[in-house]
Length: 422
Image 1: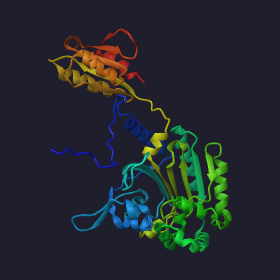
Image 2 (image 1 turned 135 degrees about the horizontal axis):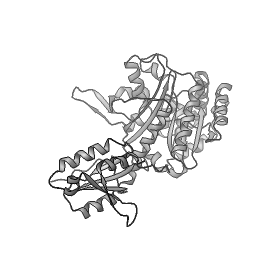
Image 3 (image 1 turned 180 degrees about the horizontal axis):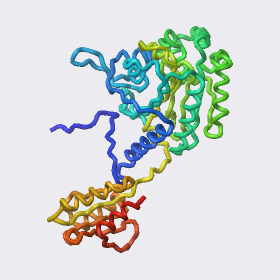
Image 4 (image 1 turned 90 degrees about the horizontal axis):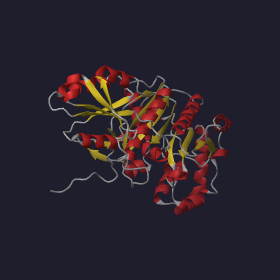
């Protein structure tokens, strides 16, 4: 029979009490840390479907983007309707807000879940990858930018990212963006034949996207291109300067006038956090303002700014050591009154949420069960046999101290011990 394997670029993540699946353990730890930070910033969670109407991404992400043209997982459902696995989270959030007629309200939202892009798997990015995102909706430019940069600084600090750099830029107001796009088009038009096919198409529809080109020859051409800084209103430059000055003690913030983001819906501030620890593909977080997206998707005018975080990439550069809960291995060596022993374990679990109690379910020997407890990094073993069940006692053994003596405790004494563990 043919062996069935997972698809290319789609990983299984299985947590383990041992260090056997270290990357998976770190992924889950990173996600847990982000949840705590989001809660600290008083953000509300939103969950959207993994499948969406394909037109949602064509209208939001942009039909000139690689995501839409090359990377979407798109297929027809049983009603011949084109649907796609979500490649990013913002479009789905705005679709949800519009559909539920919540686009006239203020929202501070976060999400976490899998995304899909059909691209070459690389360091920290797979075809199915996990992404966290934050969307701040209904707030005009200014206040939300400071709150979002504060959040980024907190993530870098909490996860102990080594020498992160936050690059920021501004795409200007509608008039400035229009003037700059014209200047960029005028500059590139005489060299149109030197552009690859993809950037020739961008030149017609969205010349700003050419600044995001990864083609080294096109990068050389762009060295002499006009800079958006010459077209920005003073208010945009002032915002960049204030952000850098305000958070300079917390993060290395660099104003980069060549920075654009790879999605068509950005309208104002854009940013990305990078780390040299990731190599060439060094961005692990990015986003910007997208004030026009809600109206483009059939909703009201809704100023908005957000960001997305690549969980796998963030995990690779995180130096955060998650504090594990105290683990107790509960070992039953009785064959007569096991239900009573399971009830004792049940009662112990309810006493203290800061501990984990692993009831070993196999019928292996005591020696084998103690070996498994050590492998799973348990701090203590609670051992209950026929004699203990009869006398209403349990054996408590420390597994972290060599040659430590075991204690026989009454069940009430064991409960008191568990209650006071941290």
